[in-house]
Length: 258
Image (cartoon, rainbow, N blue to C red; front, side, top):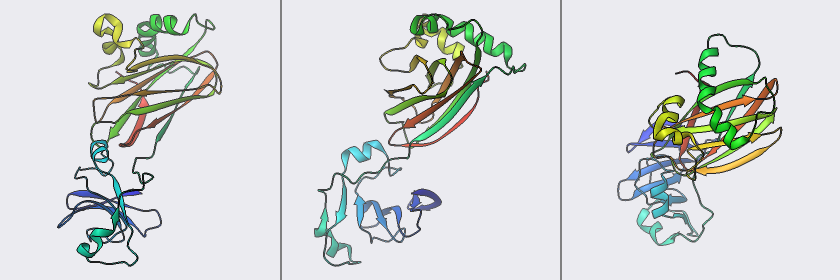
C-alpha cells in the first residue's frame, strides 16, 4: 500500500498496488481505520478502532487490535455488520516497509571535502581504536554520509541491519535528534556521546566483506538524522543499511557536510 495524496477525514488514504482496496479513516458513526474498496464509505473487510493520525502509529496499534468481518453475507449496513467483526487473528498487522540505504567510500580524492573528512577522522579516531582495534593499514579512504529519516510520529524502535557488500572498513553509525554535526555530538559529555553505549545512539564496528550486523535503537524524534562514517581499508567500500520500524515513512541520504 502507498500514500495516494488524497485525504479523507483528515487522514491519508493508502491504495493497494492492484487498485482494488484502500486503507482509510472513518469518523462518522464509526471512528477508526478501515480496509475497503471506496475511501470514506463504511464498507470493508478489515478495520482497527484506533484514532491516531497515522494508520501505523505504534501507540494506536498497541492499544487496539485489527478485526475482520466474519459474516456469511456482505452488508453495507454497519449495524448489521457489527456483531460479525472478529478480533481473533493476530496475523493482521500494519507496518511500514523497511528502508534500505547504500553508502560507500572510495580512494578518489574529493578536494572540496578533504579537510572536513580529516577533521572528522581526528574526532572519531580514538573511539575507532578503542572499539575496533589498531588500523589494518596505513592508507585509508574516509567518507561520511547523512541519512535523514522521517517517521509517522515519534520513531518507534528501529532495527538497524548493516551489511558490507564490498571491502573492509571500520564503521560508525551515530544518531542525532537535535541535528548537531558529528564533532558537536562527540564534544558533548566530555566525548562520551560518541562512545558505543547500551542505547545504541552511537554504534561502531569493524566490518569485513559480506559481514552483517544488526542492532536495535530507540529515537525520541520523528525526524532524526543518522550519520554513517566509513573508514575504508580497501580501495572501495560499499555498505547497505536497512532501517526497519513500524512507522518509518522515508529516508534520504546525502554526503555529509557541516
